[in-house]
Length: 180
Picture 1 (cartoon, rainbow, N blue to C red):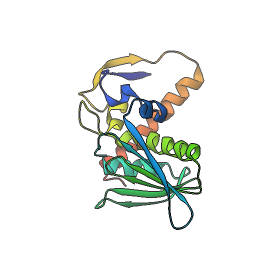
Picture 2: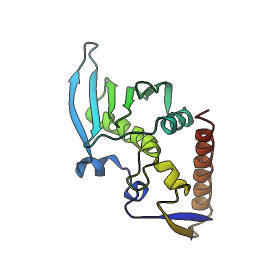
Picture 3: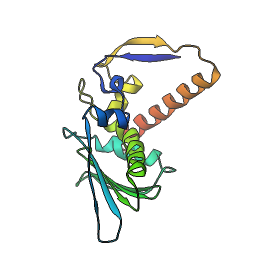
Picture 4: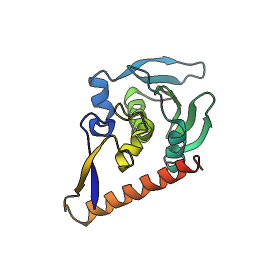
């Protein structure tokens, strides 16, 4: 199976792991604050505001329904709200994540990491400007430097790669139909 070889400065090549992004200052953990209900509000936001691709974001959250429950969307406000485990999550168009619940810092960061990994496909690539899901699938011509054969790491790796490629293709088809 062939996989796209991407430019080093493409967002997909950089990766999206929360601890690394926090340590490099790309994402910032804001102080927690209590709310009237006795819950705690945690906020993680990009150091520089982003402009998430909302149709892609909506499709990714729809595909994640076993993980996120009761997702609600407002394209006009650029907000996705859902439950993720015990946390009530709000993801804003600029990449800011607000997590509210009876949660400690570690649990809030775990949820934020999961939300960012999911939303990563809607983050804008600095090279092509499109959602990074297009780069990862090879749909983006600006970031793809070529194609290479996946290493033979066994059936499990091949199966996972093929499954991921099918999911990305499904998401891109849904986007082409307007997110439905």
